[in-house]
View 1: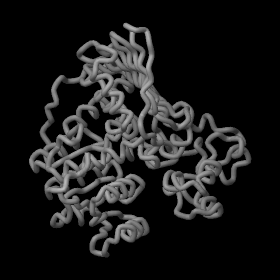
View 2: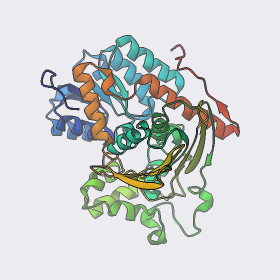
View 3: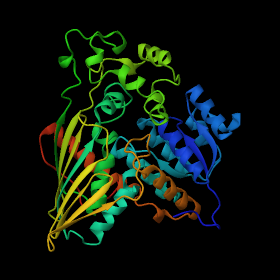
View 4: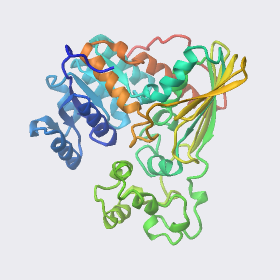
Length: 429
């Protein structure tokens, strides 16, 4: 739904000018929003963002607190900063009256989520966490078929997140989300998308959860005897599936992959520039010589109050592609792969295929299957109209899915089955 003529084009400030922040800003500008300020501690990234969006020096801040603590300069703020910053920045923004689009996860602890919810509800501002999978054309197609009763009552679900071998190496072995003490557990920083999506599809919150998973492959124990600590010096690099040289040099000449993941490594778009960056940056390290502790595979078992069940698998050892889901109902079954949904009707014993009308790639560089564009559009509609209902979830909905993640992590670490509360009461902040 586009913004109506009586609604002005919202003004938007950005906190964080990295891949996600820049992507949100470009999408918002393309949909008519005015980008009026940015906060970004990296000097070059801040300058590049200001140049792209025509910002004056006094509209570009090195410290997010300087932007958010001053008088409100925009209708809305997009917060796409590192995960540990989310809660404090969202609370500041809410107190200043900004509508907020907050990159997932909402916060790293339940207490910080509670602070965000309290601030947002007291301020009465529009708020969304970036659960982009809810907004893809594929999800809307699949959810529409379920809501129309095409397979009856859902009994069980199988859902797979194929992270991709090189994506795992880039983000969760060498990159910013490799260590839980610097971001959070993999299930929160990567797969809270999927837990939220399952709850959205099922239409209820789980009652019990169990989980298993570990860091199995990307450890020193699996390092080949002749490997060195960096790919640019390694004698067996060419035969290694996780070669940083191969991964990043193959990005050159491809605008999508130059935007992500290469921009995380270097802004130099030459072979010499990439190799120099790999010599100096964490992204050139051997995947068996890093300080990572994020799991590389995990399964989660969910039981819902209705008696329905779901299983979720996250694994690094795939190509990077769309999620794959099988849903089993009393009148039929459904299988989807991000591009098409196939339904088999038990009454007629016939199958039919429904294809997504417009296809997008699965990665962040491709806009998460159209989810990024649709989320930004819904958020801008909500800001322009002051109506939260344009968005398919709110702060308490995000807390519910985050609680499932934390319960699953507790179950994984203790070897137990965790029971979840039936309400969404927010603990005192």
